[in-house]
Length: 67
Image (spheres, helix red, strand yellow):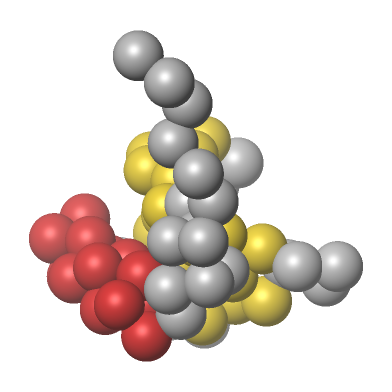
């Protein structure tokens, strides 16, 4: 199986949407996403299944909206 065929992707969102990891398994992809969020705390990280965004990690330096 080619890497391009793996459905789950972890994306570091920037001007080029950098693919950090690919996986064929939801749980393995989720672990890669969680690691990427820890490694890149100031970047937006997406966990995707094709074009569908499963989870979106926001940068830590972004302020939370008031309650």
